[in-house]
Image (cartoon, rainbow, N blue to C red; front, side):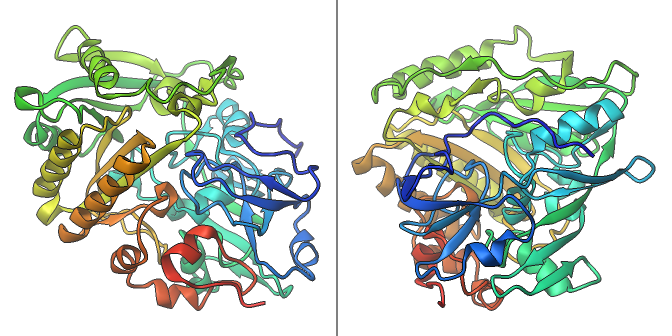
Length: 458
């Protein structure tokens, strides 16, 4: 099959740059340099790491928010050159591709043939390998589980040249360790993904205003059979407007329609916004407008899948909105027995802090088990918040929120994290020591070293 077109850049330094070069995460914090080593063919990994003495990490589009895709002064194995489609069976929907292909490139191929991703996050500019390494989730977690649940098999190349075929039945322990394994078990040269059949690009959409967590929970229970659900929540307002939001749900349209690739995005956020642009006043004003943008409490529409799944992808480099200092993301999953109480308490702490989250996403996780040993989702409520970095305020707030998450029995999402402490991580993921036995001795990341104190064995 032909190689697909290149997806828009994600703030990644050119791999041709000699010596150490910046490689930004999407949060743009922390800022580290590393030697970028392009992997263009499936067998490049062992040779690329021969003779190195400061560790390596496979990376893709850099869309993780914190430091799971960073390795200070290390070697970043850039996989985006391995972006070839290898096989597709329209009878089963099984698609096999190299791990550096992006979800955008997969969609460009699959949608015109009547197929869609089984699970997708809020951006399509992530690689297949990155989606597996972080075991991403989407709006349909309550019915479909995580991305890894739909990966039927993949290859795993280790730095010593050994190779494993991994699936639920072949090397199942390595399959489990690698899904959600933060890219540390080896390089995934290729993977097979079970795609979802569709007949239209359109989504039967419904947006419903709610006032408070109890109304959100009622809507969640009522929508259990709807495939996609997610909510925007106002985390600034207090009093009668506390935790108001818009519950958004939808299913793929069953009415056949033209299936064609999406156009390339044309809008670009052109500069780093000044640090004062996002503050409690501006975010509060935005929240009021967003809540009231639909004139009725409940609206329905037939909507293209792009604005439904990827509303921010239409503006390249939108992370510049947060300024040069970058942004911090905070996402928890709190189990059902304390989800309501914990969510109210954490939203209250955020509102009290005076720090405003521009994009606050609230959703229920379902009980479909993930195949990944270190996967983040668990049944309950997940809340994702992002804040412009204000060092004297943001980090103390994040430590308080992480401790509250721990106290309510929850955990944080490594792919979104730049601030959790080692004790917090080791409480959230007590299986980390078991997982560490599967880590490739050559591979590490700034995140892994920060939360475990573990370094590569060279």
